[in-house]
Length: 248
Image (cartoon, rainbow, N blue to C red):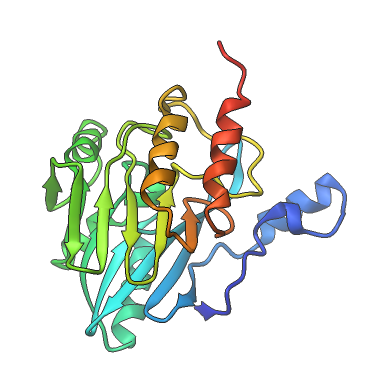
């Protein structure tokens, strides 16, 4: 399961081939959970799901380790992959202490039910909890109403800086490693569209990303919800995509 950092699922990076061949290859790809070490004590987990209209969609999350405890930043797509992730963490001699999900969509909350069943603390904002409840999905065991949550002192800080991809999207800051987990608020450099915008606030979105830019000027690594990790250029790229959108 653990691999060297690899982002081969970025289709723009694949060798030239016919559209049919490329589609068949993507259908045949094993959609298995993968983990890769980003920096000491921080792992990137990636899970996959076939989504109508989008094909095989990769979703990013993190595992952050401190003193034999592990914290999950966004669950995988499903309970099954979340169980695999917890098993892997346990095999490393670690205990899963808690999770935080950055918005209500399945690619970031799909494993909450499994974590709850294991007695692991699951955290979401009250906005996310309301959406999960309204959609009859597994709800978290803990919520917060404030604009900021310290999930673990001097390790994991969570911020609600405004609407964008969804009304409830959060970002996560790891001050020790200077890693910003932007979730689906932030687009990868390979993204040429905004993806799913059915619940987006496209007017507020660039303003929220500008707040992120201003607050996290020290970010060395930026992790988007999907696609390649990068640096703070992902924030500018996201704003560019938004400002290039036709106004309705």
